Structures are given as C-alpha cells and as structure tokens.
Image (tube, rainbow, N blue to C red):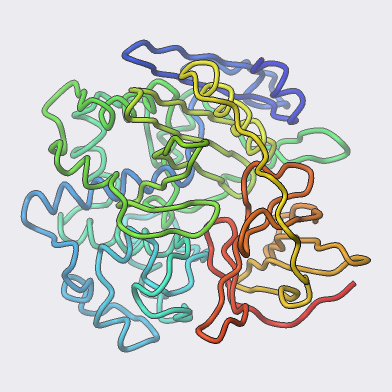
Length: 436
C-alpha cells in the first residue's frame, strides 16, 4: 500500500514507522533523491519539520523541572532586551503562551541569520518587526516565531546553544542517536532531499528550506526508528538512560491547555489534538517549505503511534492516507464517514480575504457556490488549488469532494458578524470581500 500510495501522491521516497502495544514495524519505499536514485531505507534521515516543536517544549519542561524556568513567568524576565512592538505583550507574554501558540504576534516569519551559534539570538533581535495581531492569550494561531522565542529562552537559561541542550537533555537519554539539527551532521549520513513538482513529476529542489534560527520551530532531522523512540517515551516512559522528564510532566504536555484553531481541536504544551471519529489523537507533524512533509500521531489509550516521513509536497496526502489506514486497520477504529448534510447558509456574509502575514484564506462566490483557497504570498511556495466547499456544521466548511473533516471555521464578534477564520491552525482576520 505504501508503494502504491506514494506513487499516486508523487512522493519519491517515504518511511513509515508504527508502534502498537510494544511491537514496532518500519516500512520504506522509493528513493531519497530522483537525481541519484539512492533507495530510501529505514535509516534514512528526513526533516521532521514542526514535530521539532515537541522537542523544544520538552527542553523547556526539563528546565521547568529543574526550577530554572516557570511557564507563567513573563519571558522578558529572562530576555530583558526582548523587542516586541506591543508594550503590553512584551510585559506579559509567557512560556505557556509560546508553547500553546497564543502569544498573539505574527507567527510565520523567515529571518535568515546564518548558521553560527548566535543565529537564534540574531533572529529574536528582529522580533520588533512582528505585528501583534492579537492580545496574548486571546486566540490560538499557529506560531513558529513563538517556538523560536522559547528556544532562545532555553539557551539563555541553560547557557549553551539550543541544539546542545536538546541533545544532552533529550536525545542522548532516549538513545536517539540518529537525530540531528545541523547540516554538517546530516550531509555525511544517508538522508533524503526535498522535491517539488515540475513538468508533471518530482524534481530535486536544491535548498534545505530552513535556517538555523528555525531549529526550535522545525529544524530536526530524524529517522523513523528515532521517532518511534520519541513515541515510546511519551506512550510508556521508555528510555535507554534516565528518563529526561517525569511522567507527570509528560502527561501535562499532552493534556489540553486551550481550544485550538482548525484543523486542530485543542492544544497541550506543543502537542496538538484532533479527532478520528470518537477517538482523540495527540499528534504533530511538519512541512518544511513544501519539500519534506511528515506526520506523527499517537493514540495513548491504545498504546499506538505512527510516523510518516516524506520528501515532497505529496507527503500531505500520503501521510493522511497512511495514518487513517493504520487507525482503522491496526488499531481497529471505525472508518470515518461524512456527516449528514446541513442547510447551506447564505454565503454572502462569509466572502472575503482573511489575512495573517503572508498567508491568506480567500472565500469567493462562483455562480452561487462557495469556493475557498489558501494563498501563500511566499516566493517558491506555490499556493494549493482552490476547492469548492460546503458547510458541515455551524460556521465550519469542508471540501465538497470529501466532507469527513472540516478544514476551516469562521468566527464572529459579539454582534454576530464574521470577522475571522481558522484554517491550517491559523486565525486570520477578515479583509476585503471577494466575488467571482
């Protein structure tokens, strides 16, 4: 199935790792690069993207257990020179805000500050350029910048580079010997490269897609085997050395902290929650510039986890297919079904462009039908095609072609007016109306 679905999704290479009730399996398909034709094997390194955030959060929590950090103490106490444009936010943003994507400042940023040990510090020095879209704690809106800031707090509190803290406090105790942050660590080992679709097929894109300032928010390379070690630690506390976190802290990290934004339901301390029917999944995943995409999904009550590592944008479709298949055929959950139809409201009140930084969600009217599209105003990051959408619940929409999972949810103000939308985990404010 992995071979066939990878071909269908135009994914050159992928690895899937599964653990269920202590039994592990790893499957590999395809090649790490269409230029070299080198086969992917279970030891091939892939970029795990934003699943890296769970390691950043765990590093924070290790220092919380040490008594060095406090989740609810203002970040500015640790970083007196923190430059945030909003003076109230600067005084009140906490680590809990950062780890729950609720700090309120713009989250999708790209500060290129080199590969030296000072890369993260130099990036944080530019945070005065970030608009404060919401008050701290007001809404969930996925925030890469927040995890960069959390990573900087870690390295200041520990007195050493962020990557060294994660290696010493997390990777080594868990025996995760095939996980790395820095390109010079990866290049001498078997690794996948990212691909884009050109002329109907995948082609190598000669870039990494991230910089060192992104280590905390998305920069870890890993193997399926190491990802399963991460899963076993959170599922059952397994570690080769002394467990780096207590059971109580692991439980706290996964426990819901607040409501999230679709496509997520709730957020813990970095960990995201979604549903598969009645089952509640604790998960993450990553997208590195649409070049390498991954999924990491756990179902604690069934002692189950699956990770899917891929090297092209088609990994989004492949990962969803593999995860659902495993939940239904390994765990035994009922297949997802489309909800019953609901009355379709007048679409006029929803039309418009909802913007957050360089990302927008555009709702338009095409001959009386509602169409939606995520638009990325980012160089070398193609926007996905528009799709016809239908309402599947109150103010929630899904693609008309597959209504099993809502993809966006509109939000209203106290007067009942549609003012923003949740999509891709972001909360975007409404701008201009779009027709046709």
